[in-house]
Image 1 (spheres, rainbow, N blue to C red):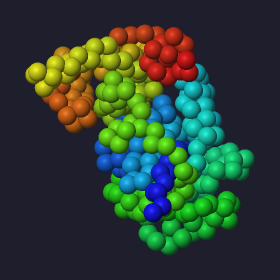
Image 2 (image 1 turned 180 degrees about the vertical axis):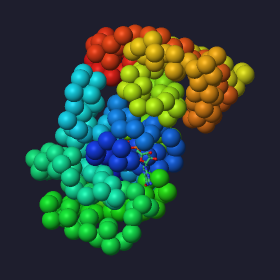
Image 3 (image 1 turned 120 degrees about the vertical axis):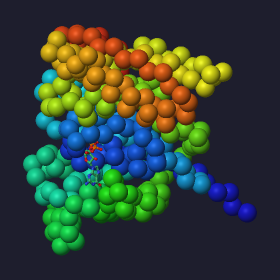
Length: 300
Ligand SMILES: Nc1nc2c(ncn2[C@@H]2O[C@H](COP(=O)(O)OP(=O)(O)O)[C@@H](O)[C@H]2O)c(=O)[nH]1
Ligand SMILES: [Mg+2]
């Protein structure tokens, strides 16, 4: 009798901002661990999502969008993304179906030219286009780069995602089970909780605010006898005017954000949650190394 071998590997999900990388990761896992929004640069950290096969484990690395970055936080984000590609077994390069190969994608393809890791071209958001458009796009990309596979899908709707996961399995080398079978991510719960609060603020506020906020969970107290977790989180903003908007008239905005975040956190943790949010002005926190470290946006 031959012994069944275990295979495992790391798979980087990369692409320009807003192409749907985090949405795809959540879809693969069937659970929300990575926050998403229609604003670019939503994802700031590298997040690993774990998918188990009967005899294998795929570790998906969600990354911030790759773009030409300015400022400390942006630079950190792009470095995270590029760094994630160097030590993986497979790269999923995401592009949007309703777009054509542009400068931003060419910038990424140049990085891929230098790498020897196999690359899948993932054409996301096929719900937005018609088949002829898709064929043109496939042709355009295939002429430019030798992809191991080309897979059109819809991360949001789910079409094609399962097939993609099946196509990945043969690319996993023999390897250990890195994480126990019941774990979804390498990120601590506290971090995901802070991210969910940040997501709700990003979605509720307009343009300029999202980039200036950082959320830190200060208390995370489990009360299993009450099936309850008590959480206090601080929202750091850069300006008084931002604080005003996030708190809202009579505290209305922060109350809505808190309610929405609480629902997601309860789903994530599987318990009732008491969530309290505070807002504090810290000018230039996103340029401050110590603050960035405290919020998890820096290498140790
Ligand atoms: N129509 C459509 N929208 C999508 C799809 N996948 C993601 N999106 C949307 O694209 C936006 C960016 O998604 P996100 O996952 O945050 O992108 P990321 O920056 O690459 O991580 C969000 O508004 C998503 O809802 C898809 O398959 N179809
Ligand atoms: Mg993202």
